[in-house]
Length: 288
Ligand code: NDP
Image (cartoon, rainbow, N blue to C red; front, side):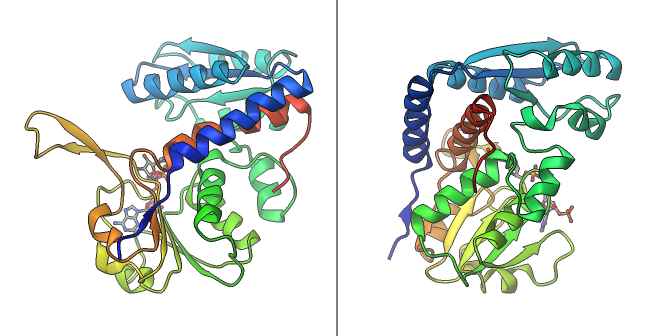
């Protein structure tokens, strides 16, 4: 039987509506400052989408642009100003940053109370200790989608494919907190297909188009595809299309539920960013 599609766009829309209602009810105007260094086309699109989404739910948003040759000091000075600006409740520095800038130093310079990306060492540490704090948006969105498909997570075997600081590691922490039995796989994992076949929940975040094949999926598993990869569209020569890290058509035949690309995890990332910004404005950290 074909898998159920987990409609991330619809779940994200409902979450955005709830955020907009709460903004009105709590009479706050959350402010999101987005910092973009350089002119990477994909980053420009992401930043524009984030700003637009913030305004649509009733937030204020500002985009601060620095040239590709900006210095570390320029960026640190900008962040220092945003840290003390009372209108700004969330600061997001769009990654990747140009080579001359130490990304870790920049992440650490953001006030942890405004770190709506959840990348600051304080928030990463709080997540691993099971304390409240800002949780990275993509893994948080994945958890919401997993719960849509599988409300009872306790004791389920979950495999996270990818161990980045922004997706894989926090994803592992959240699944562990939900009482899953968690495994993290990466480029050095031996016999990846066999490991994947043991997972009730498979989260793929490696950035390799259609890398996870259908016969790697345990029958009845929930598959969350985080990957966003642009490839040539063979059906329309000269055009490209977006695919995930999972061979979607094949996986549909084995999984119980799966997220599409696009329209799965991507919209959830933005909705969770807005939720984090609202929590920042309310002075409350997100309960997990
Ligand atoms: P990174 O490049 O930071 O990490 C990739 C991870 O995948 C690494 O841990 C790497 O292992 C692992 N990996 C790479 N190749 C293989 C392989 N052949 N076999 C097993 N593991 C492998 O990526 P990100 O975590 O930043 O992003 C992953 C994907 O998710 C990308 O496609 C990105 O575009 C997408 N993404 C989507 C978002 C959304 O909103 N939907 C948000 C963020 C990311 P190792 O550590 O050993 O090198």
